[in-house]
Image 1 (cartoon, rainbow over the protein chains, first blue to last red):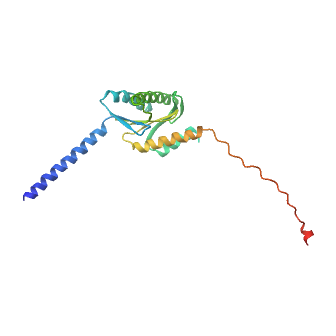
Image 2 (cartoon, chains in turn yellow, brown):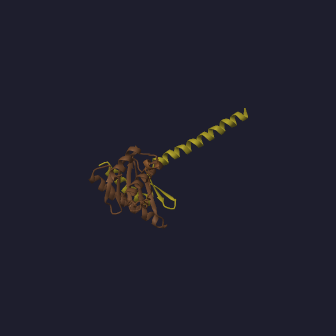
Image 3 (tube, rainbow over the protein chains, first blue to last red):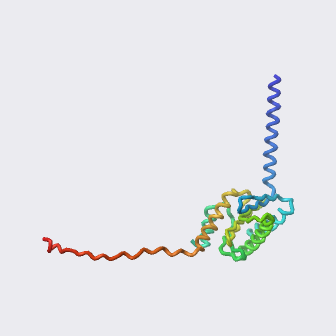
Length: 69
Length: 140
């Protein structure tokens, strides 16, 4: 009986942890971002909200709008 | 392969790419999948984006080769190969790696076209050897 309640608690905790990770990943994917790739193989990811990202996101939005006429 | 053909191949291979424009570092459009007016605006904005991104990486002395911006309505890709640049737009959430691969292949095929053809090495003219032919009649 005791081990059964332990297992139920364990699975509930694990399930909610996995759910949180998936939710956060999904939310992060929906945020606007710019990724810069350099010749040495390194990469910088700038997510909306930071001033560096906004400097790049503004012309990117303009470009997308221009492509749609 | 012409520039227009390279872009036609690109949009045929990659269904995720909606528009693509090839231009140089001065903003002169080489080829595009859209009309001239839109292509010019895309090229100038992409150049502005590229310069702003290069400033970002310039602090570390790094050489920017490509970038992608994931926006709510779609994505923007810019790939640089020497003096030539390609900018493309896609639908939201594209397969980033595949789009970069297709854009780089397109730029490479244009680069191959731009390079002057090397003259093929000529073979030395075959030496003429004189052989004496015996007449069949003489043999018999």
